[in-house]
Image 1 (spheres, rainbow, N blue to C red):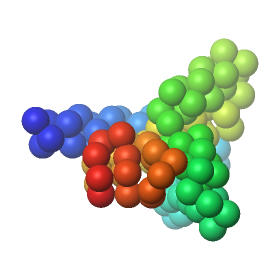
Image 2: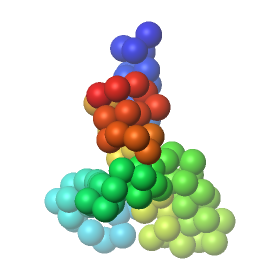
Image 3: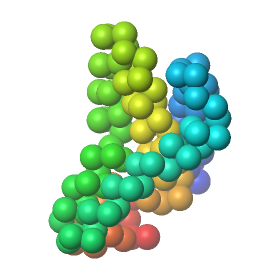
Image 4: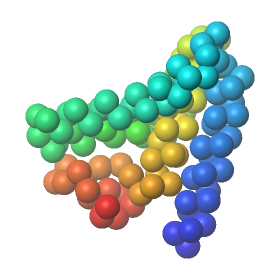
Length: 116
């Protein structure tokens, strides 16, 4: 079953990257490749403590938040919001392929997908 879930996340990542390709905002692909990993900056919250680290990480890796950002961009016709939401969604799906889920407050390695 774990294999099927990873394939599902891979499909969501690929689909999000396809849609991101439709909203490049005039930036070249190498910039988007760098931006793809930008949500991981949220891990700096762990330098303060595990609670703040988990909150920061989860805000930037929650698919529901990504969908809200996409919806706002779509409804208000704000292309940058749409692109940021798609990027967050793609990154979150990509992380879940490797087992990095939403974090619990006790330990970075304790995720909603299990222990890393």
